[in-house]
Amino acid sequence: PFPEALGGADASAKDMAVIIEAMGYHDYGARSAYMTTVVYGGGHLQHHATAELRDELLPRLIRGEVKMAISYTEPASGSDAAGITTRAVRDGDDYVITGQKVYSTNAHVADYLVASTKTDPDAGRHGLSLFVIDTKLPGVTIRPMEALGARTSRPNEVFLDDVRVPSRYLLGEENQGWRALMRGLNQERLLLAATSAGHCLKIIEIAKAFATDRVTFGKTITEYQAISHKFADMHMLTEAARLVTFHAAEMLDAGEDAVLETSTAKVVATENNYRVADMGVQIMGGAGYVAGDMQRLFREARVGPIGGGSSEIMRNVIAKRMGL
Image (cartoon, rainbow, N blue to C red; front, side, top):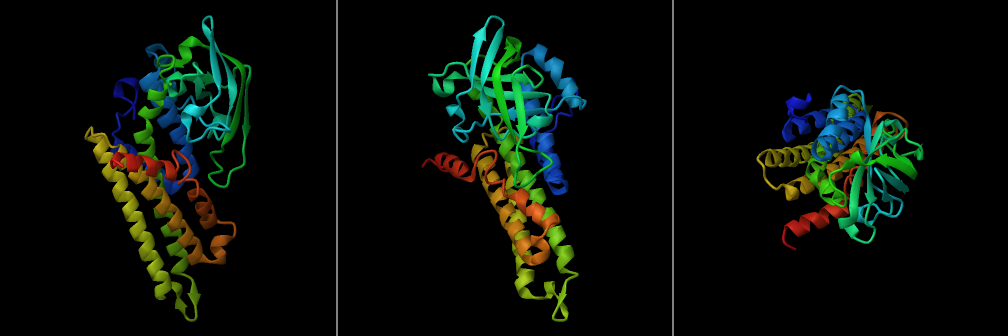
């Protein structure tokens, strides 16, 4: 999604939705790894880094030489992104950063983190600053966590103990990090919706392959309406997810303020994904419950309504956009 002048393909929002849908179909975790580096980390470098820092890191990222992750969430601050306590204090030409992050996807393999900090602890969201942090710096400790799903892209605890970061690694201006955080939300919501749409397609494919071979009482189980109607429901839920996703992408590409559309797509697609996965397990019965593709897909789908803005927060956004 980067300009050709920087080595990218200048991909549109719809281009990105198409490729992320395909990645969601093939491997949920690999898609997550791509997004943490290219969409999240790369997006910050493109839009918020100084020209010097952008030119230093972004070409290497595009060539696949640099991996990135984001560290926003803290043990006592998730949806309230401005409620963090991680501190960054100016000291000469550096900032000294101290704090703890959690659920930082792929931090354990990242070369650099984009971390949110408080440079003015009394100013709420107006005291937020973002930094690029080299994970090899003294004081950075990263501990992988065990998650329910997407185990190829693990969440992590990140501990920052008096980490000295050069001031040129500040993204944007001091105390202006909130605007940078908000800038990428539309794209994030769109691509999480696209992930879920592709995931639905894979679930249906695996369930259908099983059901068309499974014979009981002399008939394949797809000949029973109780099963065929589940597939019909899965198809409708999937198509609804895809339609709202690509509609939101087209709105973004048209230059519209598409907060309502991307928030709607994120809720519809992720919640439909979980419903489709639940039906996939039910269709396959014991074969869906034991270790195998379907139970893995079911576990992966559960994070959709949580990560990248919970369904509850998204409903708040939608209601506000409706003027409520």
